[in-house]
Image (tube, rainbow, N blue to C red; front, side, top):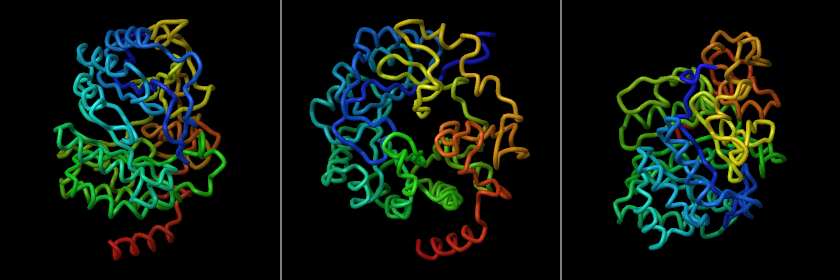
Length: 363
């Protein structure tokens, strides 16, 4: 394999499974730390390996990152190597100690999970004071001048909160907002009735495009939102740029690292089937460049597409969209129910038109 062909430019790194919440939509079923999670010294070595392989950006996740003792040392190491680092937190523990750690870590921003307005957010988080804690965290971070990003996980129940959330985030001075669709994995594996109705995806893409026009918040669609409807060019790029979906990048430009050192193409691929190796047994370089690894993307061919994606004339570009969304919703790595490309048979046109009118009038 040509070692210059693929580079793990973007990494999502789960430091621990330990968490202070048990969210209804948690894909990793976080709570207790795994046995034999990587120690800080091991993580510092992995950080060196990431930088040496040309990684540009690392997102630290949990569980809850703040519950991993020494996370700030790992972030500092990466930052000193020229890697941009951020983290995602539920915000519940944020206080003076965490602020000091954040400053030492040299984070580019702190991502906070906010999954709706107060009632819906607290319901999804299973904590009655979670929304209040997030608002307090925003106030603390703003006061300290630390950039904040908001990450929203969408199910059917909190979909209508997008409009009041936008107003709230503008009021709070938030400049970056990413939204993603919850996949039926982990705690949601047996709750498919709670998932977002695919027919609402075009409403989300329209919402993102219209709100981006106002240039008050940079809103980004997650990899499992889209693809190729009339709004596609306005979902993913920076302000003033045109950018469209070019296929799942797991194992091509993206790598996921689990808390025990397991390596996958993406941390959204939460199944042992996608483990390509372990960092206690092989170096990241050996895993990344091993022949046969990440075959679902490196060996992709349009003949692999199934169901509603089969024979699609965007198949060679889209490649079935987000691999995780495909796998957990259809049991196929190459069929995506959330695609809103016009003409796809998984979108009800009548439903879309009626709801578009309803939400346009309402908001």
